[in-house]
Image (cartoon, rainbow, N blue to C red; front, side):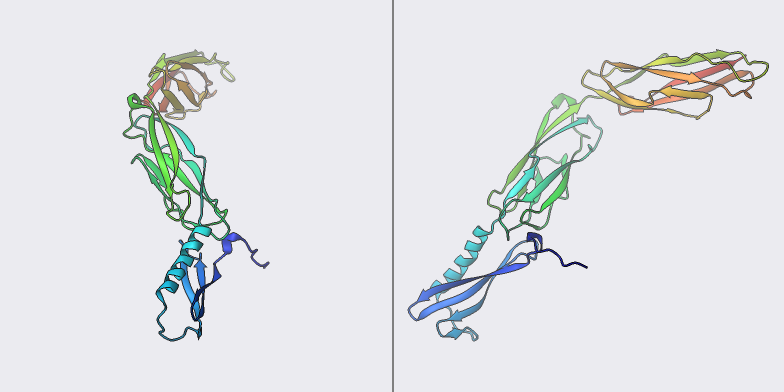
Length: 302
């Protein structure tokens, strides 16, 4: 197995040497920056007094203690992360009362310096906006992480549209924290499914021998009679799945409010079918204020 390449993502820690002058000479120490955990950890070690390595419980002069603390502050500032969000704005178009939208992805990257570690936490300005995950853990320099943003339209109203919300990305150690992602949320009113006619009837005479002759196709009009801003996303299915209903087209699609779509239906009875009346039902479904409409298909063989 080849060795793991040396990159910022596998940096675990680094020591930095400091010294502070007093009358007796120099105090020296190493300040360690440990980035192996979710947040950077700093510690002072290997302290050497003017008289040698500090092994016993020897008091450290106050100014030296202050200098040691200042070394930690300096490292925190020198190796601070930066938050980079992409994108910084999101637009959602949702249906009133429908529930959670498809997610949109936001990438958060540590845009700081080599050796920095970013631990971003995401908070939303409204309960109907959700970020998953909301805690992106420790991101070394130039390392991205992704979160999915969704909008719950269960309690959102088209009459109050558009809504504005934010996702705030923050890490107190980042120089540019917090950063904000702006959301624009457009709520569509409910569509309404209408069909005309509600029954299609096909007539055919059974031949003495051989297959049935071709039967001309018919169509019904599928309309969205909801407000202009609504959108009907529909699907059509046979309820009994009888094979003599040969096809219907289109089987799915989208219709804006006030618009319509012709749906063509073709039937072709099997040669073994006897005289009589046969019935199938096409079920048109879609998120709307009435959810379902039906068209009955009748085949009369004489």
